[in-house]
Image (tube, rainbow, N blue to C red; front, side):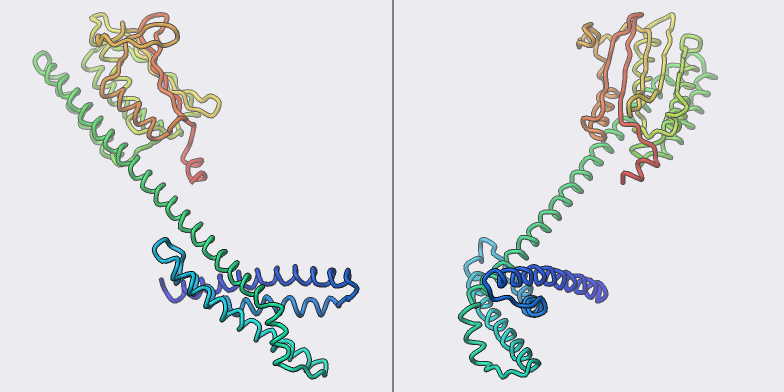
Length: 379
């Protein structure tokens, strides 16, 4: 910590001490003025303010020593006995020092008013009336400092815990993303390999499109979230590859509300869903099929939907959705998508697989609708 930072911190602490002393001085001055009047021995506001402010400003002068003792001798389990003894000795010495300052203040008042006041008599009277109260004040100041110190440590630990949790979540998300990339790449390369045996020209076009797709992927490889329009650009490049592969067997229908294009979405969130639909609605169907994609905004959420008119999966694993049995398409793509959504949005997201009345499956994702502007404001 630099000298400037230390000086700034000292000024801040000193200002806080003076402010607290002023508030306490005003409070006790009012108590002194009204209580003395109630007992038939009224004192003026000026006298009450002089005594009360003088009393607490004297404690303010002694506060650097009290704070130094508080920082140096905390009440931790291993050292609380020794710290208690040191604070008792410190409390006695500082209480006496405070009484000496009070006696000097009385001397100053007597000099101003032209009255001779015995310093010894004044100190003995103050010691008899105020020593135990002073010990209590010292104890309250030490306890208040330790309460504040423990609160600050608690906040720091909470901040560290939150930072570690955030780093863990980012590491998990990165691992899931890294698992998706080779999964997508291997599937595409397998398709190109199969096409090479039948149509070399088409296979070359697919390789070209794959290169463009990988370039887009590398541009956002470190980003967990991107704009929906960027995600759709990546998805369209992927669909160009699949259209070369399946030709007229693949039909794509897209309905994207313009207001959703600036929304923030998880990177590579749609491609696994579309790939899953291609596998079960197009690849397994000699007659081909249709894949639908929509993006809408509803009640503060972004709704992304991918649908197909296929006949389900061949996995044999069943799940219930809307009262109907549908075969669960939980491969690497969907499984990782579900985990990434949970990591990024917690309970504020849903991913549902629902059977369509006309056949096939509808995959719906709901996440909080956020743009780069709202994200920066929230941060």
